[in-house]
Amino acid sequence: MLFAFVSSITPGPNNLMLLASGANFGFRRSIPHMLGIGLGFVFMVLMVGVGLIQIFDAYPLSYSVLKVGSVAYLLFLAWKIANAAPARGNTARGTPMTFLQAAAFQWVNPKAWAMALTAISAYAPGQTLAAIAAVAIVFGAINLPSVSTWTLLGQQMARLLTNPRRLALFNWTMALLLVASLYPVIWPA
Image (cartoon, rainbow, N blue to C red; front, top):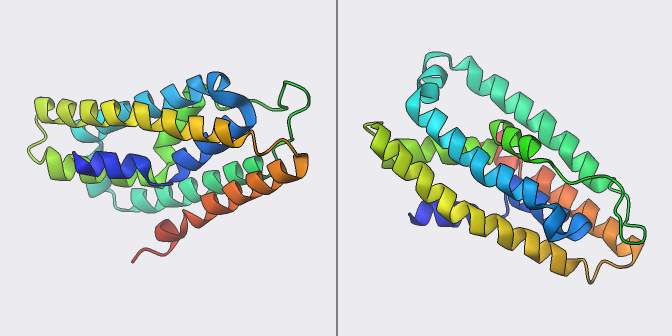
């Protein structure tokens, strides 16, 4: 599924946060974050496919509530990224997202919702369990290597970010890009 691949390599909220996590905490400490995204999104696709999509169709206001909650949470995360303290010695102050935090983040991530709803609508229109499972498995198979790549890229960028000033600039840039990724959510085409 080309859709799954393209969605996983474009710089959305998850990928920007993994880039920042790799740069600030390294690959190994970011593994729970990566697994939370990969497996959390697979679970989300399954739940959307087995009926969550019907709730949104029945209660259109739920889309607006989800949008407001998503924007507020992403702004909070952008603030946390921008204000991440530079590493001292071998230990960075703060911690990367945990598995559960990253999995739960999928439920307020506007790009994750758009991908899950579109994937189920386009690739499992009959919403049979086999079709839904196939969509979820494809996304999982593509997502896990993708999140690893973004984290590795961040870890490699850490070599350039040895100066606290450069790291702060990087963190602010990642935070601003995360805020910019909200543009299509706030002002849809």
